[in-house]
Image (cartoon, rainbow over all chains, first blue to last red; front, side, top):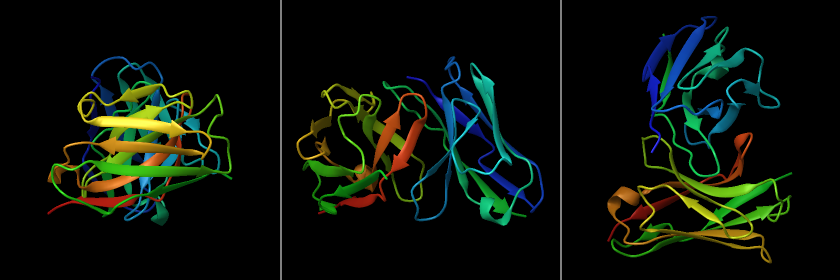
Length: 107
Length: 119
């Protein structure tokens, strides 16, 4: 099984900050990595797929990069609406392991 | 516009089988580009992929749940289903049905339904 490890688990930041979340895979997953945002009592929302492709309607301050086993999600300038929990996921039709999540809190 | 709606009992007794149905509307469940799946989230915890199913009936399960999970699809009703046998309190979670695109990951989610395993 492919394991996904996210860091940090919690991140405290202020509006306007540049924020980076890291996700590491236990083996190479090429570019098949997605990022989701989840707010309390809501279903997750897809932000980025295939490592760096922005889902339609997602603000351009979100970006993704990486390949193989190491990936990052960057929020260039944190906005009030961005305080949430973020999950990475390696995906194929055969599997879909998630990272444990990163909660972005107000500093 | 694609909509996914979970339905099923909100309370399941320990050792019983948990069963849920997802009704798909707004797009054909037989679309060759889509897989359909289930993801769950225990209260206060992270997301766990349960498995995917294709309209042909091909299934792919999380190895950690494989011995207890069954999925099926009914294209005539535009529905797919989840069965999880021998339920325990650890299976208490919000269960989401989802559309899984092999290229763009999980791009549509149902609203989720809480299933509690308790006597």
